[in-house]
Image 1 (tube, helix red, strand yellow):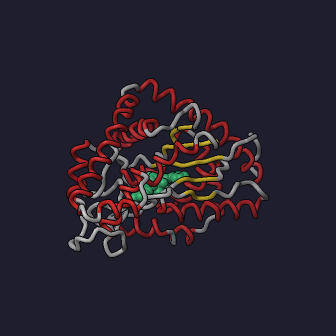
Image 2 (cartoon, protein in one colour):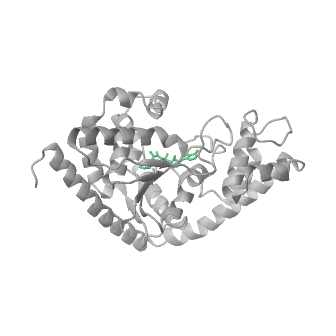
Length: 330
Ligand code: TYM
């Protein structure tokens, strides 16, 4: 019996954070046995911001090694680099024809990022959601495990699929979002009203999977909480709430148990324990990461085989799409 497909991707546009890990990467391995999974390193999406070529190359291989370190098994899942499968760009072009510029301009992430742009806005920023739709629809993926910030992108993907299906007859599976149970939106350690992000310029706002354990402990100590001195989980104490979410994500303990345990112990002890918990987890990941990153030949073999498997599936959809829109077969 054919298994249902799962697709997800992470941009190599910086060194990934525990937000990416909790909201997405740490959940990927759970699907490997029961679904046909594709996990992509979406390097083409990274061109929506200016990238230093040498850094993009390094971050791409780092991310591949981190995928493997986080338990992705290339024998079970298709692990590949987006730019190695040209069908993503090809389908994206066709899908451009069923999306209006107005719809793209109304996307929250576009509006936020365009506003922050100092110079002119690159067209890749506007067209970004169409490429993401192409990623997912090419593989007829049913489920997409991502953080909450990607919700609108999954909605527009469904919308694009529906429009195409309506115009050209049934072609694409409509994908569904899968949010992680705890930590679908991890916030900055320095400002709990904004999302923790790879591109945060304040190094203390985010913890990266490749941060040293000492840096992890230090950043935790500096994480902003409040002066209420009341150990509780609520929207008046956003800094603490975020740290409790992170604690819960790493330990799988419930919020209630965590609050009960630390109620009388206080913020200091809680932050120091959490620092230890994260430091230990990143240390374990880094041991694995170091093994993978030091063997470039093995990485190359993995991404080559991944691209081959992905291309086979992608080409099948692309051929169908080209035929439906009226392109003459090659
Ligand atoms: P990206 O690279 O920004 O983030 C990768 C994944 O991490 C999640 N995430 C978070 N989760 C919880 N808390 C946070 N603070 C946090 N920050 C990021 C994101 O939701 C995402 O799941 N557009 C996507 C990449 C992409 C993609 C796709 C994803 C391109 N094509 C197809 C799924 C399917 C992005 O920029 O993710």
